Structure formats: C-alpha cells, structure tokens
Length: 210
Ligand code: DGP
Image 1 (cartoon, helix red, strand yellow):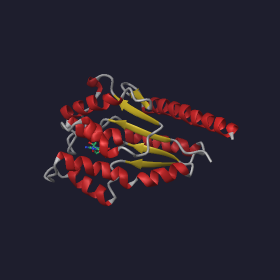
Image 2 (image 1 turned 45 degrees about the vertical axis):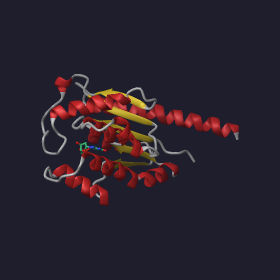
Image 3 (image 1 turned 180 degrees about the vertical axis):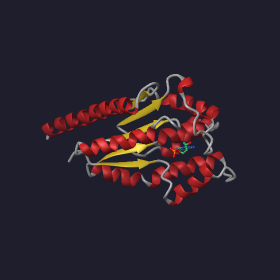
Image 4 (image 1 turned 30 degrees about the vertical axis):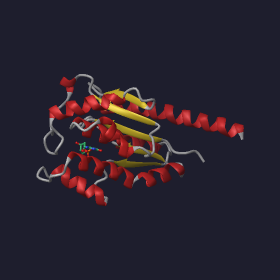
C-alpha cells in the first residue's frame, strides 16, 4: 500500500489557508483520494481547550514559554493519529503545523532553535505550502484584532520568522497577491499532483527492487 502524502498549509493570519485547505479536501475527494484535514491548533482536545482560552481571552495569563509548549503538545496529541492515517494510505492535509509554532513564538522573542526543539520527532510534511502576500500593502487588515495575535505589527514579525524556513527542501512559497481563490487553488493542486506523482514513482522503483 502507498503511504499517504502529508501536506502542510502555512501562512500568516488571513492569507486564506482555511479556505484553501477545505477546497483541497473537496478536490481530493472528487479525485477519489482518501484524505483527512487536521487543523492546528486543534481546539477540542484537553490541551486545545486551554489554547483556545489563551487565544480568545486576553486576560488569560500564560508565559510565552508555557504557551509555546502547549501548542507543541497539541501537535503531539495528534502525532500518532497522523502517522496512522498516513500508514493506512490516507493523505493528510494540515492547516498550520510546526512552522506556525516556531514562527509565532520566535516572533515574541523566544530563541528560534528553542522553539523548534519540542516539535522534533513529529511527522515531517512531504510539502509545506507557505501562503503569503509578496507586497505588504495588499494585506487586508479587515477582521484583525479579535484574537491575541491579530495585530498587524506582530504579523510582520511572524512573517520574518516564517521566512527562515524558506530554504528547507519541502518548502514552497505561494504568493497570493491579486489572485482569486480559484487561481491559488490551482497552484496548490499542481503542487499536490507533483508531490503525489513523485511518491508514486518512488514506490514503483522500490517495488522493482524487490
Ligand atoms: P488559527 O486558528 O489558525 O487562526 O490560529 C490561531 C492563532 O494562533 C493565530 O494567530 C496563529 C496562532 N498560532 C497557531 N499555531 C500556533 C503555534 O503553534 N504557536 C503559537 N505561538 N501560535 C500559534
């Protein structure tokens, strides 16, 4: 059986990640690909509930280190499920993952490597699609301000931290400026097809060796 593909969709707040992840799921389904969407933070688990209070209640006090470790623990809560889904052949789409964890916390001033270390050992995505605005002036501020991190200046710092991952071998940046939902969806689909076909070829080679 082919292992499923692990895709992470990353980006700043309000870049359209959630719209694109659900569209990708629909398209995978139409093509007969068994797929599961997991959104981080997963706010319904025991740790996720604490994270939700932290994000929505600005009076909820938590040190930056504690908050960081909770977000990481939330990913570990689901690590086995992700592994099992992949092993059973399902494709898994993640709406945010390790990279958000490091980018948001290091933007607050915590050391980058310290932020990365609790996530070491989590399943590595085959591809990370990082959605961003190339030109800052295209960022819509609409809706910012409802949750803890939704402040334009902070988002700028997060963006700088995210960009530190751009030379990773699984990283692809998708510019969303002036593109329709459909156009961004097409780019994401092309990236998915490329990675899925690479996985199929790798499997064929492997089976030929047996
Ligand atoms: P979302 O549900 O995708 O809107 O995320 C909620 C907020 O939490 C958003 O401002 C980004 C932030 N966030 C997401 N994942 C992490 C993480 O792992 N660590 C930290 N510090 N913040 C995160």
